[in-house]
Image (tube, rainbow, N blue to C red; front, side, top):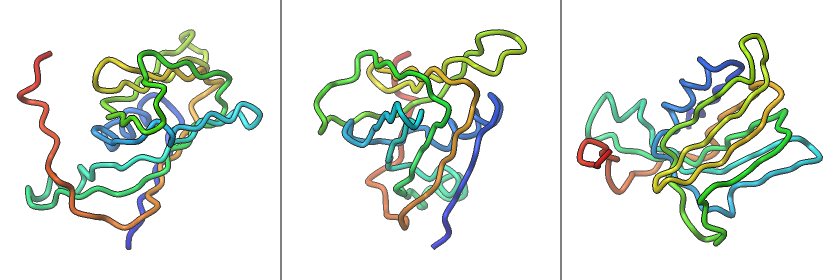
Length: 147
């Protein structure tokens, strides 16, 4: 089993993680905010776009750990409070507070209009695959969705 580990330390790196995590799904109970540790963590089932792009028959998912450090606060918007609810991640965005200021807001954008907003002192993120691959039930398709 090959495990992927990626890190992000700036907005450009975060864009790469966002692409890797597009269409990841997780239950709300798998989102954890640890204020004393200044950490937000999530366990997600990530669609493996890196293999799907090579072959349409390579639709795989893998369990991955996503960790944001240096987080000072977390706010949710339109995220169901039900721990069993499933959230589908569309993108991760970063908004800096100032031009030369490393602090800002990391926004995790979910299908259905929900989001999590993490205030960070600076970008310090890691993504690590923690399981083997399994066959995905299908391939996410955004072409037929209304915008």
